[in-house]
Image (tube, rainbow, N blue to C red; front, side, top):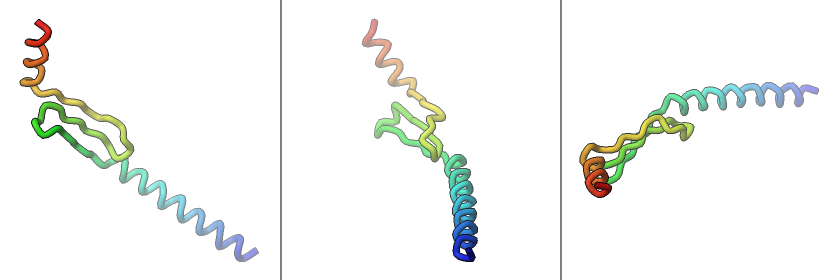
Length: 67
């Protein structure tokens, strides 16, 4: 019975660590862009897309191509 109590205590501790790590990941911000800086994407540590930015120069190129 004592071993079961130790196991339960360890499981609770691990759960608390997992929750704390998830909160840290949620607070992280990761930015990435291509070498020409035409596209920049920002995500959080849980792979949720927070923003996508397209440069004005690239927009001008694509609108000229469509005209």
